[in-house]
Image (cartoon, rainbow, N blue to C red; front, side):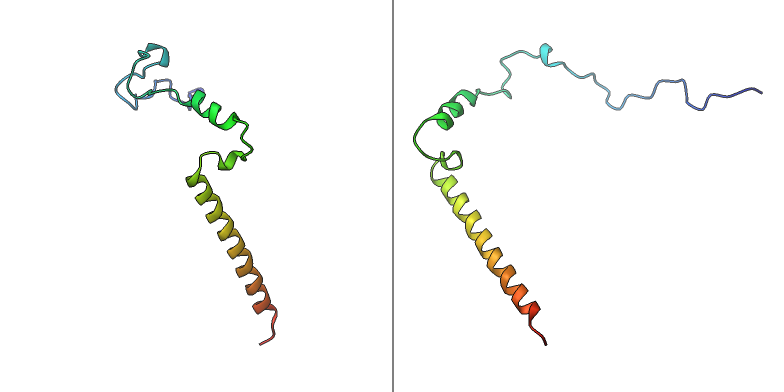
Amino acid sequence: QGLKPIVSTESPALIFGTTTKLASDLPATDSFLGKNKVPDLQKLFQKADGLPVHLKRGVPDKLLYRTTMALTIGGTIYCLVALYMASQPR
């Protein structure tokens, strides 16, 4: 009898019927690439205007920052009250 191979020697079936395209094969003017926004954002974030990076984009950043701070402070107060209530005897 001898030893029989456990692993099949046949190649597995293709999962997808089409071949994939390499990035070098794609034309550079495809619509999904869009405009490169990185240089504009670098100019915005590296501007020396005294603002921290997390507030550079104006009102939306301020709104997100203040909402986060309010939720953090509210959660801390809630945890302290829950600890106080849990420490009281019944």
